[in-house]
Image 1 (tube, helix red, strand yellow):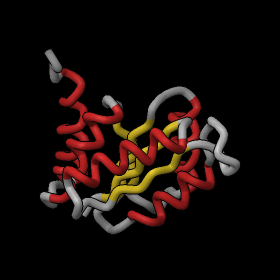
Image 2: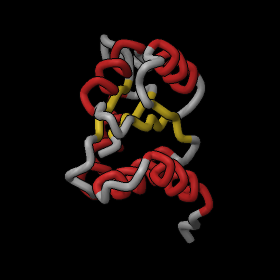
Image 3: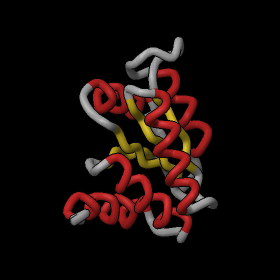
Amino acid sequence: MVGIVIVSHSEKLAQGVAELAGMMASEAPVAAAGGLDDGSLGTSFEKIVKAVDSVYSDDGVVILMDMGSAVMTAEMVIESMPDRKIKMIDCPLVEGAVVAAIASSSNESMEDIIQAAQESTSEKKL
């Protein structure tokens, strides 16, 4: 099963998105990596590495990020793990995480999960 890592500047936001995705697809391996080690706002290279390690399998890991330095830090993590199958997804954080978790729990491929999460960008709420 493809693992899912939620990266946010906010620890609470990352945990909340991971909780919601896990509620929608309890079998999916989802991990949160939010905030700095002291709980303040920011992104932590070490937290992202630990999150990736916690959900990694041969199927790979997808990373969903909120913005800015979360994207840059996730890129640095991926560069530091060249032997691993890890991809970032450009999609809405909450909707993309839920879609990715459901697809992962259905044992879809990483490519199919990425496509499904990216398609969540065009879904209307009203």
